[in-house]
Length: 292
Ligand SMILES: NC(=O)c1ccc[n+]([C@@H]2O[C@H](COP(=O)([O-])OP(=O)(O)OC[C@H]3O[C@@H](n4cnc5c(N)ncnc54)[C@H](OP(=O)(O)O)[C@@H]3O)[C@@H](O)[C@H]2O)c1
Image 1 (cartoon, helix red, strand yellow):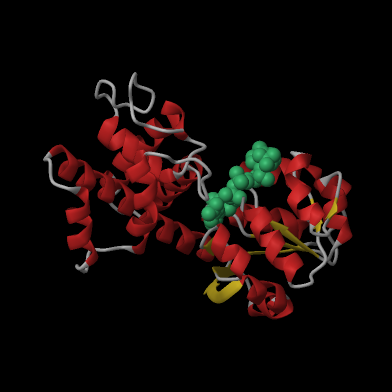
Image 2 (cartoon, protein in one colour):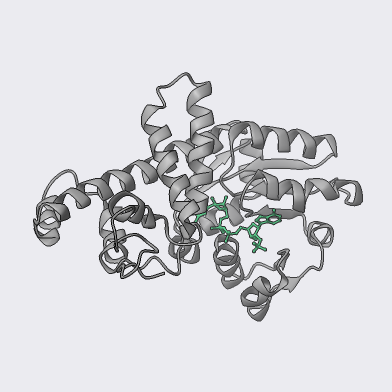
């Protein structure tokens, strides 16, 4: 998802791209726009001075890149990590890359496919000013750039922001469920919400999916939000913060994924919170109104 959208943006601005994905057919949209497809990650890294990683999680970074480091020369190469991973994970990758004479920094992003295609991502950098200066054009072509601090700090800031995605969505689902069960028109709930300080743009964005109970074609699938909340839990525990609420959200997301909704939009957690366990209303229940 994000790798393709970021690639489309960069190709559209005239950057030359060599791309790799373990599932080769997923590179087709970028190949048809002019990217060269590398058959292996080693060949992708060797082809350019800058490699941008937009992988699912740290495990994927290990499988794609770190496991192949004995076959790639990293002198003069920069690895820019843009996925959502944990602070310690990013720091560990930094150590491995620099031990191999490579350069590493992180720039996780806020915003999704539309923002990536339009160059409107919020790009949070953990690294040095020299790295931001060197890769100024690429970073600024993707969006607004914020220098956060050292490696791991941008990763943490991104997790702090994604915590709000998970907590807003669960809070919205619960209120909506209460309104529905009480026979109050949802439109009235939304109309009052829109006029209040409680409205969040994400409620407006996700409402059509929830209303239609159709979570197909996600920009951001539930399984990634579960991964993020697991990382946020770890970070909050090591910061000695109260994690009671976060643990409950983690449980809801885990159940949503276990119900088979992991590849759907994360707003599908509404199904778990409002319809699960009710006869004929569950995501997979007989006669349920849920559309996958
Ligand atoms: N989607 C968003 O709106 C959004 C926004 C901001 C940040 N992010 C973050 O950006 C990253 C990418 O997200 P996405 O939405 O683009 O996810 P995605 O579409 O699921 O892409 C994940 C990529 O990682 C690869 N991958 C997954 N597991 C792997 C493994 N074990 N070994 C090798 N490759 C593996 C996938 O390969 P295959 O294609 O072969 O599965 C794919 O190329 C994530 O960290 C996500 O949290 C996403």
